Length: 350
Image (tube, rainbow, N blue to C red):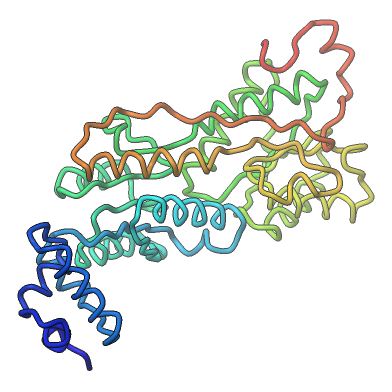
């Protein structure tokens, strides 16, 4: 195995000089620095990065923690792609760690990244609550950034979308287009995003004076098959609905298959609306009307916050990000469209 001493001999310098070059010491002459780098390249030496980070207190790495239940789907692909791209743009390495299935496992993942001297940690929490997250931020000097969770008392440490408001306005769009019997497939239990979208659904119905019919609500788990199964459950209950809102696009695609297998056309018999705007949404038949979640902008803002802190700059609290309703072909006018037009209550103007 090639050692630092071998590099020093090949470059004609001392071992301590090689160490200073690797640590980025500015007091080493440029000609010496280039000689050391050439010796490293020719010898194939690989420095002990952990040892270097212990010495310099800078690993040039940023950790990302996401529970593996989110791995299987396009939303995670977009999240990971944007994080990796932005991390690379800032000249740092991304270390992805699985948060697994509990509070303890998410805490263990955080400790794993702390032990490896990550310069900052970004977490997409599934189990840690506000109290635990605030405690982590208070106890550690390195920047912590929380994605998709509002920390009202530490807004500079979080990036999140206003899922409740987006859901409320999306359902209001359906109401404005003449739908009153609106079914809903929720996201996974325990998910803050699922809870917020459920609240938005109920808020919009309540504001329009439409009673909540629990027979029109079924639980999903973000996946294609859960959307299919939840929609099948709704159809078995025989409570009529002219529109169906799904907690994400995957579930909407699964629900569309269940509707078709029961002989119901989308949108002829049931209008379909969902969330996230994954790439396939605009290519689905019919193209999905869905709320676009600005993942790229959220990740960009998260990394900017982290890098500003690392560079010693002050940061300001971020405002909630807003989604955008992408109106496509999966929603048409409902049974009460004439009433809605007469009352002049289009979506967004209630």
